[in-house]
Amino acid sequence: MSRHAFNPSGSAPPSPRYSFGAAADGWVVTSGIVAIDERGETQHPGDAAGQTRHVLDQVGRILRAGGCGFEDVLFVHVYLKTMADYADMNRVYAEYFGDRPPARFCVAAGLVKDDWLVEITATAKAAKAGAAS
Image (cartoon, rainbow, N blue to C red; front, side, top):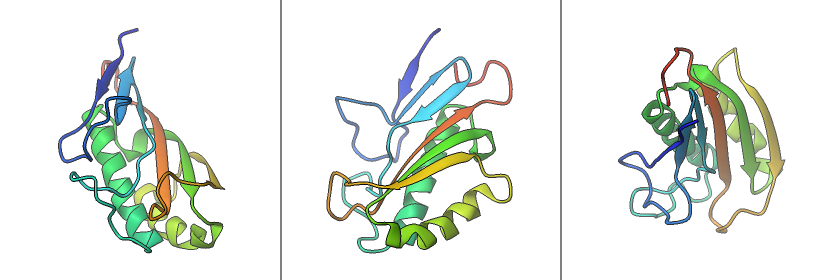
């Protein structure tokens, strides 16, 4: 197995401790993605729907860099600061995954920064052989 770790352009500043995406043998996995821009600044403070859209746009960028798309996602982890934001997150989430959503869990969790409301990770498997390796 050959693992390829990457940080797509336009992402938040890379961390020396982890990559935003990793791929091996057709699989693509994202780190926990939050609503920060390429300068590391929180986007859409206080707006769970806006943060969800920003996060899923970033997840999509990472998936594409690894040779996958939302249609290839098999499992998603969603962490919310408060379950009061569940409906707002879910409404935006449905725009990205439509009527064939992947397996998922959603829990309330203490996120690293107070203004982060949503954190999402995704695991995908490229549909075509040889992708994301």
